[in-house]
Length: 447
Length: 171
Image 1 (cartoon, each protein chain N blue to C red):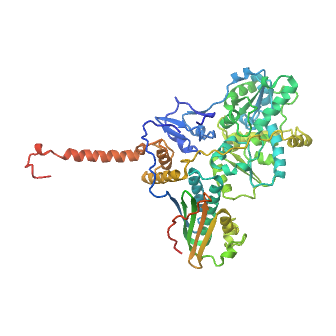
Image 2 (image 1 turned 135 degrees about the vertical axis):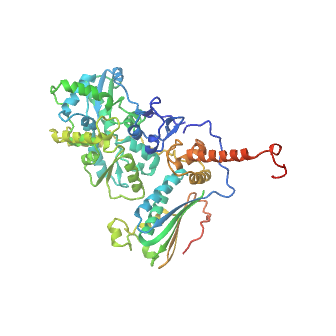
């Protein structure tokens, strides 16, 4: 039985049973039954498309609350690069970083800085790489989960390096341990996340056994407190907290990662549906001339994450402004330090990304063929409206659900209407028949 | 998936003869998008049937390349993917110019694609070599001026190579 953590959840009370989410889900993972949406856990990749599309705000991301901080003696905030794009133009990175100290954190470590480390490792990896191209980014967990299910044959081309979030947590904790003398278990690293996929990644990681991130706070949850703090306080920090350069901060939006890695020909694609069509091209053997492919589930990259406050275009332009104003232009780590990190292989993935075969109709090919034949027959029989009123995202999906014994043909409202009509006509026909005993003419007149 | 109590269980009846499924794609001249679409739909079906990754990938490539050949070199045609428990046959039939020299056409990099097609990034002369590489058996029948029939077979189980009925060819 599949039993793994998923951050994307349904708020049962708020769900009105409309069919917006079922049509938008790239994995066809949602059905509406008994007036409520139900997420099929095995299929969900936590991309957050349903959170974005739900007008009733019934799709939510399960993130940690600030109370979780109290379980650790020393708390480190790990703000995602995209987080800096959520504030007004007059705010700067230094002030935003500083505000974490006033919200219960003892330290702050920029994920953008870890992104620069990852960029250097990936650059070196690509330089030495001799295998099949293109190589895919490992930064977006929703994309990796998509590939596990829909593009398993491309998994070998994913760069085997941990995400900037994971690297940030490890570096920050190690530093803190040295500085404070506390043991690892007393130090808590909290990622400030733009998306639910990162929450799932920390609870149930794909490319490492155990995540170093101890909690994930949604950007939406902490935003208000930071804005409140920034409204009153400005410029008081020393030494400087902001160590990341524009190269790392650029990971907050699509193309930033490719630019930061700066190796050969790269292609950057954002939006889960775009990612799917591009990966389809790659698996047909196209785009072999591309060295590196940056793939992000959210349109616009992490600034488009469903937990962000700002519209993605606003977030992106603000992040760009911050990058333009960025005075730090030399990398915090020296080339020597970065080379050492690469040589040691500290931030390599320890787990192979495993394919997940969940789309199968049956374990036996013959039986699967029979089922598919039935799906075809049923689909041809359905109206082809793809209206979603049955609770499945399309007529074909309903046919699949029927064959998988999860739905009935009469779940289709058009089919049901046809049946009711037939029944009504039959009733009418029956009602017109007068038994011979009641007939007012000769009983032998009609048969 | 969620169990539904109101659904009456109706298991698949085993078919009298061996089950076989055919996917069909009509391909028109210069319809470049249809090639990708056919390959994607084929892939989705094969994944649902639970075929091995490697086989799914190879068949998707065959379908794509065969469809591109029809798009580039013929007036119109059809691709059928016949799936049986022991093998998959990709049958591509077109009405068109035919292939004057098959041996030459099988060479990597040899292409007769018109310039406008090559400018679009297609017609690199890898179509037939790719198909050959991805299939266990490849059979091409062609008549210049009439058209081409291509039959690529992929065995799902190397021990079982009994041919399946694929219907008539029209060249």
